[in-house]
Picture 1: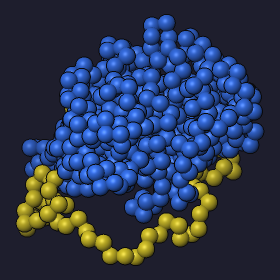
Picture 2: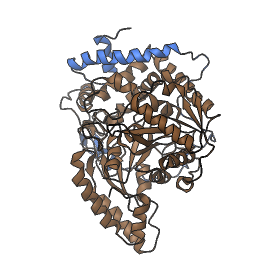
Picture 3: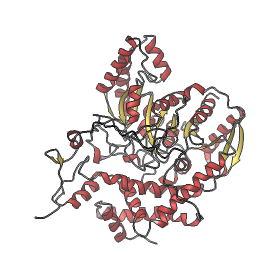
Amino acid sequence: MTQHTVESIRNGLLRKTFSAVEFTREALAHAERENPKTNAYLLLAPERALKSAELVDEKIAAGHDPGPLAGVPVAVKDVIVTKDLRTTCGSKILANYIPPYNATAIDRIEAAGGIVIGKTNCDEFAMGSSNENSAFGPVRNPVAPDRVPGGSSGGSAAVVAQGTAVVSLGSDTGGSIRQPASFCGVVGVTPTYGRVSRYGLSAFASSLDHIGPFARNVRDAAALLEVIAGRDPLDSTSAAAPVPQYTAHLKAPVKGMKIGVPVEYMKHATGETAARVNEGIESLRALGCEIAEISLPSTDYAIACYYILATAEASSNLARYDGVRYTSRSADSATLSGMYQHSRGEGFGAEVKRRIMLGTYVLSHGYYDAYYLKAQKVRALIARDFTNAFQNVAAIVAPVSPYPAFRIGEKVYDPVAMYLSDIYTITGSLAGIPCMSVPCGTTSDGLPVGLQILCNHFDESKMFRLAAAFESR
Amino acid sequence: MKLTETDVRYVANLANLSLTPDEVARMVTDLGGILEQMDRLAEIDTEGVEPMAQVLFEADDTATLRPDVERAPLGSEAAVANAAVTSGGYFKVPRVIER
């Protein structure tokens, strides 16, 4: 189970080595057995999975193409809605929420023959960098069980690393796919903003939210993105640009590709993370890439900018959880305003409350110009840094996180330290460009390090090509 | 500027969020530390820079419009299925207007 790829499953099905139902049963049993080690799955969906598998087997029996993800067990972060399958967003306030519809990405995966086998643990409403903010307990890193898997998509990274899913979906607002991918030693992709429909992704910060894939190799991540990308009338910010066949061009040479290394990132990078990333850069040079030092001068202001915009948007988006339409309601509900306040006070965890408070504060009367408007202008400067850089280089490489996976409990009591650790990932999120983490060796303790690759808007093909060349170095 | 417990209670009220006295005290420290980071933005010159509200791409003015075709709605049964309290197919909330 831990060795299978999208391609090997397809070949197994078409050669009748196994049926989709047999394979799915085995995947479910394996996940059920292994999950207590990590707490990565919040639930498994055997009925739904076996029903999807039967459809794949029927298509094969009838001589039809079973689809590009035929029989592939896909795990889904629990902030992405799945019809009739509980979706909690890692929050107590949605502990019993059963969505009446599927996210567009889910519809596309199932139409492509993919098997949704379960929902994965995450930081509450995707707010966090360690998965310790889940109302359903932390996730253990499969590589080092006393350490966090990263966050917020910690469960989705862990299941792929652990081999209890072949690929998974995560969501990324400021690094929530790339950072856990780097902590768990898997591939994680944040596509261009608008490349994948956000319909059915519970909104955290709408101008920054992305859905993206996790996989054990670049090809599988590219295969999953190919399926979920593309225009969706149900998300007005989804892009109409045609979706290239990413998997078709993975082997094209990268010789002569010009790659930028931002000085502002490397000056902060220390220790074994910096050592591995520098070795990674040397491997790219050995592959024939031309390495150039570049400058992204607004980087130092990215964290402040991000946490103003993301919390402002979150404070508006999370207003919907009010004890009326979806959520649990407080017993202390004598008046309408009391009902709102107590339902939210009892239902949300500490980090979500902190961000709602911050967002409300920066949007409140007298502070709007100094914080929110100022941050939007700084965001424009950060995006301009990248636009300028991509006039001279085809891709940018950088660390993903300043350090590898830390111990459970080590940073949870220091929100400022936790926010500062997002420095390398939030710049790409603010600019809306595609970025990914690809495994880049381990520390002397065996902890995975990720190399981040960033490209210009809609340049995923080039990003995957470089990642694939790096992966087979 | 230093954040006070009064500020925290005022913002919590705007956000419709009940906080325990312990949570209020903790918020004063946590938000204060984070706002200190955020105040650094005052250092950067943004004269003449247009605010960026959204990642925008070149597209026709009508690119975000979908065809005006009828679709079946969710239906009230499904719409209220997750509500804490319902009555006759509607969401039910505590009394707002006194007779």
